Length: 419
Image (cartoon, rainbow, N blue to C red; front, side, top):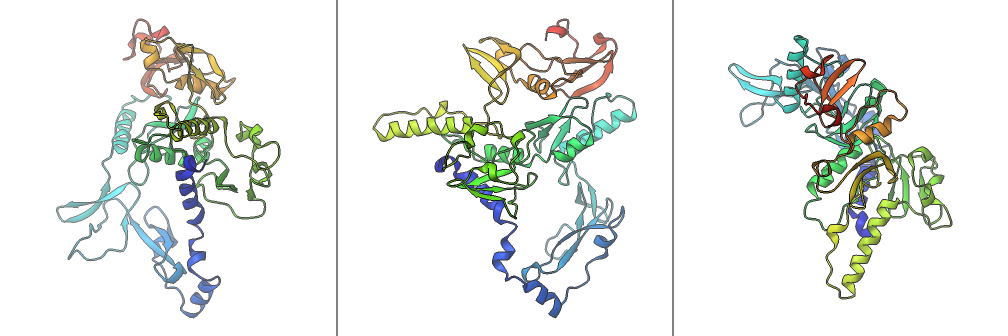
């Protein structure tokens, strides 16, 4: 499976070695001798103070082997800053979280970034001040660059990963309060989006990226060729210690201390005698089809069936929409149909089917407040809860105020109950 995993190996290798780079460049014990003989200068006070008005980023200093620490002060909104350039001098520091240096009359000042995420925050804040935000609406979260945060939630339902532009991507978990966001890092899911956007177009066959968990984090085990490592589920960086590495030619990945059976829907792949596997039914199916196409070409047949080889989801399972007897149905990670959600061919319901609501209800399990789905598994445009109804978007997020009278909703139609 070397061809299919080429990029996957590269990405995980990068994550694997980035933390041990200094060990390669510098001899063990060098820094302790360097600090003893040369000493480290006192860093800027902002990192030591670290309060609402004085704060900074602690970084490795530009000394040999980064033996000392360096403090980069971060400026507050309205503080003077430098945009750089010839003759403008040097400023040690930068504008803080969500701020950028703007040229104005009288100099350069740190101002709040103008980004789609910040504009969405401003819109929420304006509506909130006038009492026009819904009970289940959440204020958008933006990162330090003004991009959308990694997680969005629908209270009482689920949280899901989102891209920097605020689009829902792979990764979803039941909403259990603030801890859900804290546990969903979504870096693996976002890495897959980067791969798809930058490398996917034009390639004949799917690119396999690192394996994710259903909530968008890194699967706790990643493999390079025939060696499997335990990794940090938030960053994907290889962990060190006893029992964190196995060779699949001799031992299964189930011997790793980080193996979690609850995260592995395909335990049958690791049974039997060596050599063992690190794969899933979906990944194996792709490789089998690719091998068949390559074999046909080697034997002189003029074939080009790569367009029929569809990729797997970031957790290496099948897509959540399947076609059976020409009818589209919503399925879970094992390909089992969810409820009776389906759509007949040559219908609008068939063409716009996304199964997001069906998948959310499946994740919520026995909850008494699952959303109402359309017959094709999409979110019904109007959702009702405890006597109040609200408009929602295709991801199930509330839009505007809820109403007791459904006819007063902006999304109301006569057939709202049946989509």
